Amino acid sequence: MDAARNTAQDAVSTPEIKSRLAAILRATSGNFLEQFDFFLFGFYASAIAKAFFPSENETAALLNTFGVFWLGALMRPVGAIVLGAYIDQIGRRKGLIVTLAIMAAGTVTIAVCPTYASIGVAAPIIVLIGRLLQGFSAGVELGGVSVYLSEISTPGNRGFYTSFQSSSQQVAIFVAAVLGFILSELMPKDVVDAWGWRIPFFIGCIIIPFLFFLRRTLEETPEFLKMKKHPTASEVFASAAANWRIVLLGMMLATMTTVTFYFVTVYTPTFGKNVLKLSTQDALIVTCLIAITNFIWNPVGGALSDRIGRKPVLLTITILAFFTAYPALSWLVSAPSFGKMLAVEMLFSFYFGVYSGTMLGALVEIVPAHVRTTCFSLAFALAAGLLGTFTPFASTWLIEHTGNRASPGFWLMAAAASGAIAALVIYRKGSEALAPKPVTI
Figure 1 (cartoon, rainbow, N blue to C red):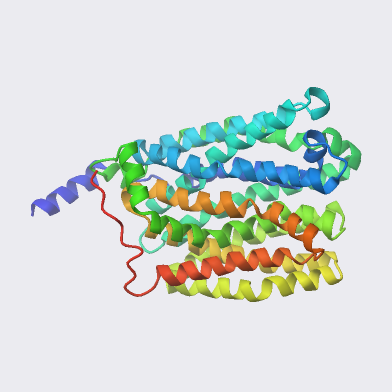
Figure 2 (tube, rainbow, N blue to C red; figure 1 turned 90 degrees about the vertical axis):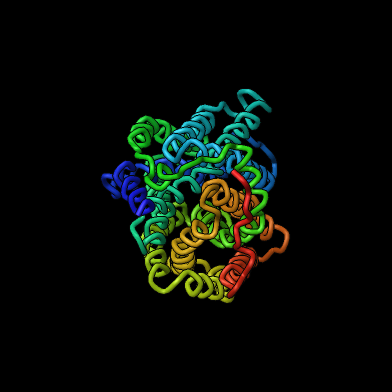
């Protein structure tokens, strides 16, 4: 009777989310800025290389740019641990406001940075600092939003709710691609390369105040408010270290998502222009359409996994991706065309969307509840920082050193294998790998 009375009292004293739709929009708003900037950095990689990393060798300059892109992402695990512990201790709402502030600082830094011709070696250093700030924030942004969505989800719909973390990013990709298309139509290429590429970055700066407004009105999750005790930072670190096996498996699971995502979004415009020699407009149209299909497939994957289970969806997609990635790219590069590029990218978009929508719900479920943000964010940040954001660099390097324009397919196959192995271990009957290691808090 006492237990029932306490439960009833908790239900009365803990406020419920007033509008889940509004909560989803507010929580995912910060994702827009992150992915908007990440995509712009990848799409305008060639122009950024000329502005901040001058070199007589175009490939070397491009590799330098993608290298900075990747180095910034290496800050993700640091941000996941530091900011993840902060969010697990003080709350989802306050933590997501902090991550947005740090991300905004990085965006503004890159937007206003003078070129190498103006200030010399200080230019690439400033750009790197901007990327490090963005990486530090992104390390927990995705995890924080995913955890928030999972904690406000209705029973039996966790996969569907968490899938909107990834779906929201596709809106940013679409808007960025549309802006890029408009610029390419209104400005000569040399003007865009010289300074026009900054315009979308400035637009990103302009919308920052609106995003802050949305985040400030975010409600705390009832699940967090019901927790009797919130762990200190040292307790969060200890628990995350004790559960390293879960974090490692989570990283392997997320690798398929991050590698495929950065291939079909950030790297696709460069692949279309520099490798396939298609027009800028063709590459941007493909990217716009990919953003739309990504947006659709994510909730489809999440909802499907809520109905039939996470394992069947994860294994089906990874097996299909493993056996079709290289043949699909080989078919594309044999005689590149807009239609063939669109078909291949649509296939990869299907893989990414359905898998990602499922994976997010799976990852939230396997990490310990009391350090959910830290462990989720760390697993995802390791996958994105070490492998996902390395995709543009890896693809460029593979093509340069093998002479095979379809060689990025091997990178995609490796990511699919990682996801399949992780799913098999995680959902193995009687698996001890997922048993949370107890840590006194």
